[in-house]
Image 1 (cartoon, helix red, strand yellow):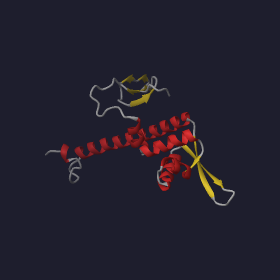
Image 2: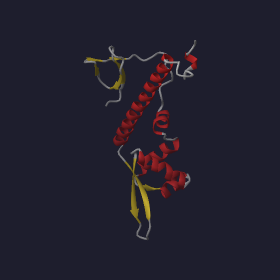
Image 3: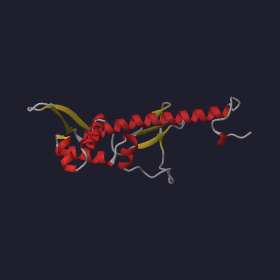
Image 4: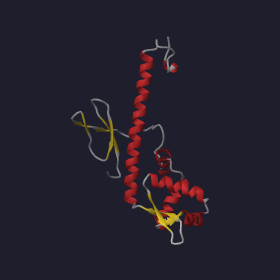
Length: 172
């Protein structure tokens, strides 16, 4: 997928799609949705996106960049370079490994014991991993919005089954 992504809407059923080229629905090409001149919120920054979708903090982004620049590093090395607490670095690096933006490898020490080494993955791999996670997050968010709509309509349509869940929209 390219860098220019557009939102599309089906003129028949109202389905929405996100992509970098024509998308079909109901056997026809969906139309591009024009940018709303008064959006609900401004365009998200990279920081907003990382925080909201990936629960990645500014510190994690900084540590991710340190690993990408430094190559293979340990928690101890990063603690010396950044002056962050080792436990904080460890927690953040484990999160970064869980979302696939760094690799975590266990190495046995000659003197006994073990150490975990964190290595960067390619920027393209990071981009693709984050894009995939974003699409999964978007699908889950859409499911939540659809459930909200169903719940609202059902509570308005059948208020006799006790107190309506959406009192703001209900009047006798």
